[in-house]
Length: 199
Image 1 (cartoon, rainbow, N blue to C red):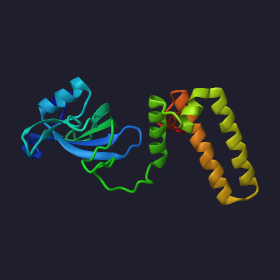
Image 2 (tube, rainbow, N blue to C red):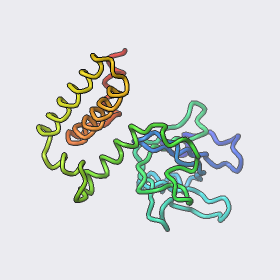
Image 3 (tube, one colour):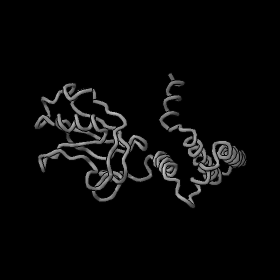
Image 4 (spheres, rainbow, N blue to C red):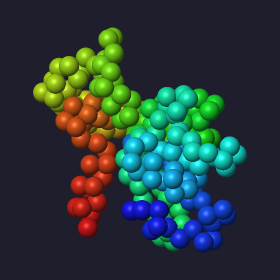
């Protein structure tokens, strides 16, 4: 994909609107604009760079805060006049210190947020973290916890204990996410497999 692939004849100032989405949580992070130079720099360096309309200069997101947006995938829309960038953020995207510039409810996509946190724990392996302890034990030990939590969830389901089932099923999902991380498997990998089966 190149900047020439876009039809910007109807866009104000010939700038390309860019929606940035967290590649893991799918949360919409921000909206910005690119000119050709910003687009080419983004492609070349793998960090989202915009054209600042107020300062009239290139602006790489995170150049002052360190909260870069690392490009995972770039997709153009059906009219070829808008770009979607799926990115991995280094930290909060908004200047307010929030993950997104949009005030969407935090519970939206929480499983994906939890998956992203587990991934971060795996990268940093902080001492005292239960997730760290699990990951150090490896897939066999984590797998035993998954089986244990699955059994407890089934027992509560069979007994008709809805609240207890929610509790145990939540334990099951968490431990399954940790096992997936230890196997380098993402939620997107599962979605692709399920989508393939659906077809």
